[in-house]
Image (spheres, rainbow, N blue to C red):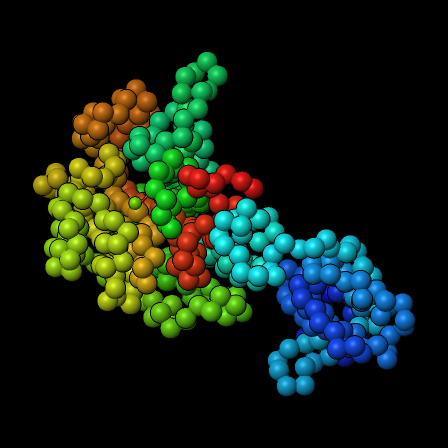
Length: 429
Ligand code: 4AD
Ligand code: MG
């Protein structure tokens, strides 16, 4: 008997096959058992006909509970009306009879589901979100590899901050003093552009975020990309192309998942270059008109981001922020007050998905910024060194994976887009 995965069932139409999986639902009519089976790669209905199987097979059926693991063999048939395949069961082997499964009998609150995240991952919507996440990850790799970028793994344990000192996770590092969990690999991959030209990292980053919003995690995944001889304008173009590429991939590969999530596809299909562009100063003016009390030197709040994109079908770059409220490494325009940076804001209220900038490439200016922001010069000496030996204009950006997946999958809270979320009030399971 050929063992197949459920997604291959169409290729085995009319043939005998063995399927191994879990029973996620079942019902019986007295003479027929309908078992809904999933194996991770697909879903199929298995039909057991009392008149056609042995008494032993029928008895096994009667033992089955929700989430029991089983091996079923029989003939693959096609649903008379729908584009669905079915298994006409001849034999059943029970692998394990599941104990009473805690999820699914009634509506559960988010805390219960998060406490049971290790089980909740099996639910249809959670399955769909993780499949989309996987497509997004692979699409990002594909885009970057085609563009000539190579992956450089940046360290997680670091002696210095990348994104300001207020969200640092701190720990004692043997006899060497304090170390911090990386907030972004950016500074390290900047070093690698002098060796490889175009590089990226992709891994977990950490922020001791005090915020309890639907957009914040304390551990999340970031892809930082960095390229030599790229300035602010070109940097945004790369981000635009990357996002369009990822969306097309998900639309092409995850139709079933998007359907399970009841994601409206129309807004996704409209995502095309060019994206919107607005300076921070213009954004503040526009937001004030729309009723926000944001001031010239303020960061955008979540509500501001939603307001700003409410009439836009495409994401919007908010560029050229006051340097005073951005990171020390950003290059400024001639005024020396405005950073050549961008936040990319997704439509439909999903907020900032990318932060990027051109980097300060002049040694003395960078040193001045480090001092202005009261960072320790010795800790950043290695980073300053990069501006001594063949410094070049360069730029990069960081994509927040969970924010991007949240938007594409239409998931309200980012905690559902990562397998095991870490938030200010949650570390388990
Ligand atoms: O804007 P951020 O802080 O930028 C950086 O860290 C730069 N060093 C990146 C670079 O230029 N290479 O973070 C980048 C993205 C944000 O746009 C957002 O999507 C996501 O990371 N992000 C978070 N996602 C979930 N939870 C949090 N607490 C996040 N903080 C940032
Ligand atoms: Mg940012």
